[in-house]
Every structure is written in C-alpha cells, then in structure tokens.
Image (cartoon, rainbow, N blue to C red; front, side, top):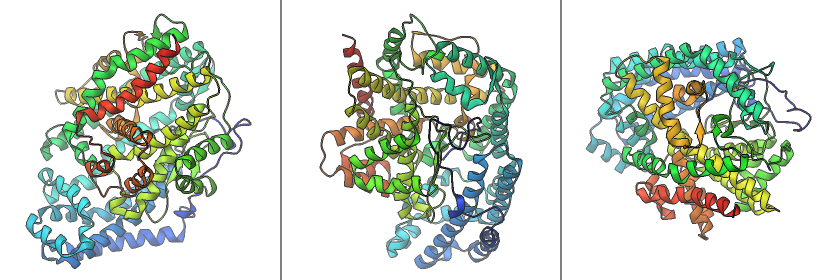
Length: 605
C-alpha cells in the first residue's frame, strides 16, 4: 500500500494516558539487516533471476502447459523473496525515516533488487506476445495454470501499451533515479519540516492533529503554521509535481495511453466509465452531502461563515476524553466479533504478536497503513495512535485491511493482491462495523449526534474530499501537458476544486491554496485517491445488503475477501446482487451518507 511521509513527537509507551502501545517485531521477515537468512535470500535472488532468464528468455512460446506453469511458479517465488526483502527494508525505514542508515539500507536493497530483476523484464513482454488461441489452449489443458488467468488478463491488458524489450529494460533500470528518487526527495523534505505553533516546534503529524482541537485559536494557529512552511518550500513541491507529471506524460505518450488516468484504471482492473460514473455521482451529490452538512456544522459551531480550520473541528458537545489502547482494542475486536467471531480471531494476532506499531515516535512516518508484506508471512499495521476517538476508527480501518490481506494470502503471491478499488472494501467495512457498534451503544441523544456527525465527516473526507483530489489531479496532469506549471498555477487548480466540493459556507484564508503540497498520494501514486471513494461507496452498498438481513452475508463476505485479486469486481459483487457499472449503484452508497445527514437535521427540530 502507499506509504505516507514521516512524523515526530511522543514516546513508545504512548504517554501516560494511552497505556502500553505495541511495536513491530519484524523477525518474521528477518531478525536484522545483517541476518544470515537475508544474505542467503539476496544471493538466491541474484542467482535465480539469472537462471530464470537463461532458462526461458526467447522460449516462452515453445513451452507446453506444464512448462509454462513451472515458469509462472518460479517467477512467483522470485516475487516472494524480493517482496520479503523490500518489506523488511521498507518497514524498518518507515519506523524511523530520519535514520540515514535505515534509508541507505532500503536504497541499497532496492538498487540490488532492481539490478537482479532486470533480466526478468523479458517475461511480461514475451508473455504478452503469446498468441491468444495458443494461450487459451494451454489454459484449457492445465487447471493449475488456468488458476493464474486473472494475473495473465491483467498483464495482457497492458499489451497495447508495451514498448520494445530494450526500452522496457531501460525504464526498469532507470526507475531508481526517476520517480522513486523524486518520491524520496518528497518524503525526506516532509520529514525535515518543522512548524512553529504558538512558540512550540512541531512536525507535520502533530501540527495536522491540532486541526481537530476544540480550541479554535489552536486550529487557526496550526493552519497558519502549515501555510507558512508550505509556502517556504513551495518551489521544491512544485518541482516534484512538475517533474513527476512530465515524466508520466512522456511515458504515457510512448505507451499510447489514452489519458493520464488510463494506467491507474488498468492496474485497478476497472473500466474508465465506472470511475467516471462514480466521479459524476459524487460531484452531483456535493450539495446534498458536504454543502448541506457543513452548513449544519456551522450552526453547531455558532459560526455564520466557516474557515478551513473549522472543517474537522470537533462539535462543541463532543467530549475530549482520551481512549486508551486497551479500550480501543476491545472496541474494535468486539465489533468484529459481533459480525462474526472468525473475524476477531483473524485480527487477534495483530495485537499479540508484534504486527502493529502504534505509538507516535520521532522520525516515524505519519498516517497509517497496513502492509501485506508477502503471503508466506503476514501483514503489518502502522498507526500513529494519539487516543482520539477517530484513532479508534483508524485502527478498525487498518485492521480491516489486515484481515483482508490474511485471507487473500490463501491465493498465493500473484493472485492475492487486490486492485486498489477493492483494497479499501474490508477496511471501510471494518470501520462501519465499529461505528454501528458504538452507535448502538449510545446512551444519549447528544452521544448519538456526535457519533453520527463524526461518521458523516469521515465519509465526506473519504468520498467528497477524495473525488475533489481526483479532479485536482486530472486538472494538474492536463495542465502540465501544456507546459511547466508555476506554484501559482498549481495553487489555482487546487482552489478550483475546493470551493466546489466544500460549499458556500466556507471562506478560504490566505495560505490554504498551498495545501496540495503535503498530500502524499499525488506524489507516490497518481490517481490513487478515487479508490477511497470507490471503496466507501461499495461498502455502503454492501452494508445496506447486510442490514437488510441477507442470511448468507458473512459467508459471502469472507469468500469475497479470500478471492483477493482472483476475480473482477463484477464477479465479486454479483453474489450480493450489486453491480458497480450501474450508475444507480453509486447513488445507493451515497444515499447512506444522506440518510445520516437527514437524521442529524431531524435532531435539530
């Protein structure tokens, strides 16, 4: 999964109010950077990549079904070992991104693996040149080979966009000093940023956290501090975005991609018209969702006009209590167990075996993620747990990813990986289960109101905000194709989507126009963001089926997660009577958010 930029501030115990927070035990990958097993695997990888190329280059079209299966399985094992090494190096780095030794170790591992795997570039190219009828015959002759058909279909979707063998090898070799280098510059720049908030020096994560404080003056001070530092570094961020967008435009042009978004749609195994239907449904719903909700929130906050620092403000009646780690753990596991005890059983080892790194620590990457590592091992979850109620939802979210990744691992390395559009399914569903559990337990009208409002805000951030991000990216890449963009140009594109998505109740203080600068997805994974909205809409529709009382829902749900990347979204959703290519599907998901806002408005009467 995409990793965010670095962080700082707090300690391993999480502070006196949070209890003892778990840290990663990475020994299931390797015991240390000089572990003999790692040295052995690196040596095996170098030898096996060369042997694989010697055995198969120029010969794929001569293999029978059993021979092709053997090649696929050898390639899969190479994937496992390379993935294991890079998972270990990457996770160590994200624990302390400011540690130059860890950064060097990760970069050296990446360089070696890139060099070792260069001889394998032929594999995908030759595979895509296999005649359709010939491949169909091989698949029909061998069930074990046919199991990999979804992998082959995704590979061959790139067939029209394939370059010459020599150019593909060049791009492979050049990647470490291309986009990967610019990604690292962005990460390291973000890691080094310091923000002065009322005389206190904070990092990015701690400063962003102030935007959810009750005290409005703190939220405002944090916003101005963010704006000042982003402006001071705006030329670097502008250079990163200009370079990456131009690099992408050049490669897309050579590959004859019909649009900047096309590569992401292909990798997501989703049709452009499905994404367009999602985007259009959400934009059309802005007035019914975000505009309506934020107008309601302005009244709760006693404001005629809202500023951007009020967007994620807690409600006046919201408690500021801290949720310690034990309570967060129990809340999420109880919610999972209420859905199905099996779900809690799969989640339990994350807490018991060092699969979660929860504390905010100096140099640690900000945000949260669940990294699947490789299928013979297990996922690892990273959090920056500060004890806020929304941190409990983040735990539920990332643990949902973890459960999904554990179940999908049954498919093996090549078939376990879920397209981004479906990767958010279990995470958002885990959040919804936890939310409904809390909502059912609400003892007062005010408590229910706070929970509903918090959920609506999370959904708006997941759906409305991410589609606005997607529109910004579309505009950015289209504009960059016409020429270099100044920081002011990018600022203007950012502001063009903000007012539209947030509504008329908002004013935009000077400085907010630079807030595109810190969003890591624009740098690491162009057009990734619509996957969040896709996942939320899909889960809302799924949850509606569950709430309607489908007796077989749990069994169907676990089957869907176990499928990993082995099925298309149409096939995964069909057992639930859902179809994402139907524009009405997205309205079904959006109507759940609308229903929550309806209830909040009714509480005002």
